[in-house]
Image (cartoon, rainbow, N blue to C red; front, side, top):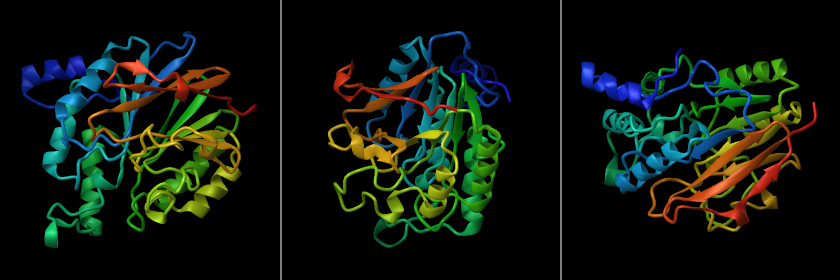
Length: 311
């Protein structure tokens, strides 16, 4: 599948009135001879959500970063229940992004019925409705599957999607089997996994949800076994918990899972101040930097350097 740019989408809108979406699905689109690859992470856009103008300014800022190679959205692209209207808002929003985009699902993209229940509460979707919303996600991003892998220099990037109803962020066995196979083939490639929810124990219990079953990646025991058997995995990139840089465990020693895999937490975009994390992938290290979009500054006190495992 070829990469489609925001500019191409805009031309398509003028010529044929169709709304297409920026997506990179045929491998890396950037030059391989640079010093690093710059990945920008969007945590939980919740579109359209609150203050769409502020979210659009974030996109314009990312467009202005000439060294940004890719944007990753780690789930909950839709505001609430993954309705047709919300997916239409997702399309409209990302038309303005001129960087290749990779996305995974969160619970708000597939897990709930369109119609709210009593007192406006969400209703868990049945199998048919969930499958239809996952198909809508694939169509929105022109994906053959909701899970996939890409290479960036010497790194393997693995994109996993929530697709099972047992918990808010659970991975199906079909997807886990694919993950096992993919990791077996790439044992010598330092690997970064992108998923909606974090690994357990990588935040303080700073609120009633942190580290509870619905707010960590599931099935937790199976994921633990897979990571234990694949030491090339050293970074896990998540959203879901809406943890902001104001929380002391946003960037701290507690983020390291099982003494080996560092979880990078990303806050949501439904707020006045939006922060994004950037991963700078050098051949021998990954530098994580956090940007405050309201003040238009990088936050050096949150900068981290993570060394990949030696093959």
